[in-house]
Image (tube, rainbow over all chains, first blue to last red; front, side, top):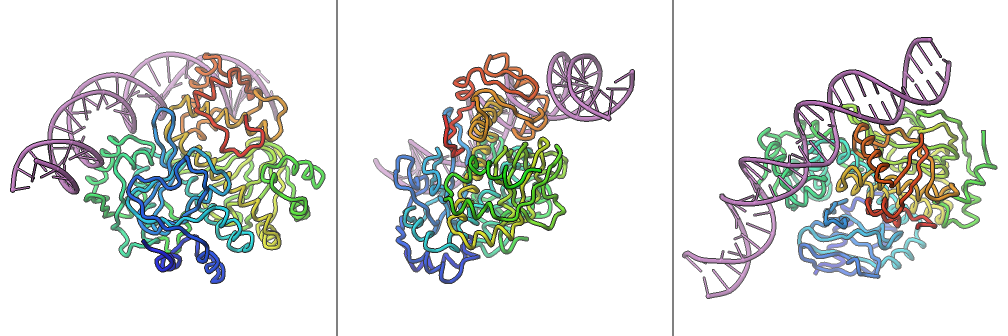
Length: 243
Length: 243
DNA sequence: CGGAGGCTTGAGCCCTTTCAATGTCTGTGG
DNA sequence: CCACAGACATTGAAAGGGCTCAAGCCTCCG
């Protein structure tokens, strides 16, 4: 189980963290985190939980989804290592969404009330977290136009581009090659498509020489082509090294 | 041109305002607002503007959209009177989105930097605005699953339900009857559909006895039916009188 | 009275879904 | 070391929801 040490490492790469002062960073780090190791599919803060909590993804991937009565599922966000998520819990504890691990990994969570007191004592910390939810809102907005106005090819291409940039920003060394630990069914629930159709789209991207897929490893062979097909502009990610 | 007086009236109903103390309210009200009267279709803060600004919709309706290179448009949010919007400008000035008036109306705008200084001096005000962007994020998320996982009927039904609740919360006296100043083409750009198909869906909702349409006046005849068809749960709106 | 924008309607097409079956890989237990 | 289960990926055929194209209509407004 990782703790302060690995958290410390994380902070330096934490996106929400770019605008934090040293003092604020310290304030956050000194909060009572609880680290847990979870398996793929495990829920983070089950719907039944009364305990509102925010969390940092120390390692592994996670997603947040809403499930409709007919069983359909929409994945509204995917979290990569070092993401700070669950801030929405501060404002609306129960919104019918659930967050689960995509892969096994470690989560450092903190009780909402503890974070709230820290915030009250530290306005610039509050500002950083505010910014974090603003970035999340921008991503939602981008996904909205992605699902609402692009065809299947464009949607998938856009998702791949986004992940490439986010993963590069978060951790990965090499740009165009990364691991995306999602099944085609999960990609479908993200893109508002069907698993079957995602499969066919992926194949066509492959045949067009844009990407290569090996297990969950993705290699983008033609970034220009993929980005233009997706009409991708990374500005909304607020990533430092966005290119 | 309306000014302090009408702004004052607005504050009492302002959603972002529910959790503001009297002092914070005063702080906001004393800021240098610029009131403008705009026509339908006018841009609020044109894309060419270097001046970042946030605004309150004093009267009329507005929307925020993104336009794709192929000309397709996705409306990502609709603002009703008393909405505080454009907070995203504080974090990312240019994100390829544009905000325009849906109807003629008045906008009270404030330069971002003025708001920023006010925020620095007033942490609880910052908290209220943070909450505002959190609510907006929640709406995005809801729209995401709406477009991603519901068929055309469900999407339109959900939009109508949302507007009914928001308008009731914002101003309207009677519940199930309200004015929605959007053309079918704009509704289509909101729901990720085509104007033609929106027309047919609207007709089927009418034939099913769920709603009545007269010009831009909408009457919901069967709230239960419409809400269940849309799987609508108003919790995400964070509205006081949500029922 | 003419025009423009918005609403309707019809017909045909196509992208995406559904349904169903087959193939592939990995981990497990005998 | 092989058999077997389970989770994913892949494929084919057929149906369908929504789109496109195109024309007709209505209403408001100058």
